[in-house]
Length: 460
Image (cartoon, rainbow, N blue to C red):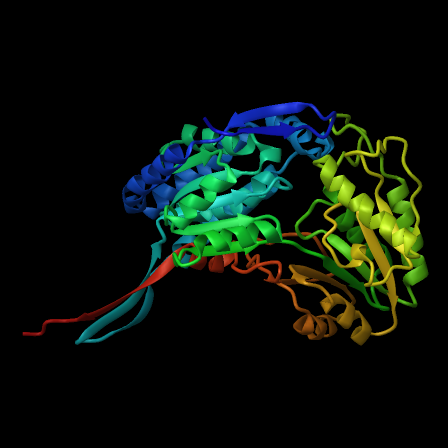
């Protein structure tokens, strides 16, 4: 008998969906079926795999009218934002477009005596552990290129978005992707660790907490199974004295607050040059005061509840601790704030790096804003973090942005934009944000292994 997984809706605290986890034996049988199906899948022509994956993507899009309210029930995103299919399709389409080139043999040289080249070989069975905050887009970042490259995939989704994996699997199967080639599973932590430790998978991709990533690496220790991780973040924005102030405020505050601040690359701390600081704060507060916190099923709601009461409790604790230590909170408690999952978005000033809200991942609708007087001061503050996913620089001087960007300990440097994932660029991090890289050509490199061919010709 498995464990029961319950998705608790943040809308009203009710159980929205329940599923039973697989037993240990069922989990191993699933992985074995994926392995048995992999060689035949990889033997199919590349274009056939691409076409099947993109048909699966289109089938997900056809479900969007059902998916949008389902996401609101599961993790609280307002229906007015229309779900994730735009990014889901964009990322899959890009990876399909570059597949032939990215997976092509690397020709090293051929003459009358030798032919030498390097092939990209699929790992085998890829295990994806996906998060709840952008449940469709984060899953497809690995799912689409893994299948296109010739791997089979086992997907385990977060309990908070329990139905997402089922949706994707049903769509892909309806489009013709064989059932054993892509399987959605419900697993408890012990069975997950046992499968990884027993080398049931050839590559593990995990998106989630630092503790979760450490658990994946511990389970894989000594197996030589590759583990790619995207973990916590505390992404900074830096507004220089020559920035377009209105664009910087609009983009950075949206990057801090959209999806109730529950974005992997959301802006969690902002450093503003002293010449623009007062105006930046005033405009930021004005924007946030216009938000309507409420039921995500209401078309007028611009900010829904956080996905879980305990996530909101952590953000409240960080805000309360900061205010007690001298920070200034600028947003009055909103009517819909219930002390639970519905949380008033907050802007804090008079903050310091001694406060947890400027050090620990918040993953909620709060941002601290600090005044700086130089690039050197801003750079030191941006690097004063255990995390490194993205950084957003605001200036009219591209060379200056590159110079500062070269010194920031991060995976992506943005200039005059934030909180966006470009599938042509490698999605990666450093420090406690993890290691590995998704999407782009590098995504294919991480989902395959190199195999060298050194062929001596028989001339007589």
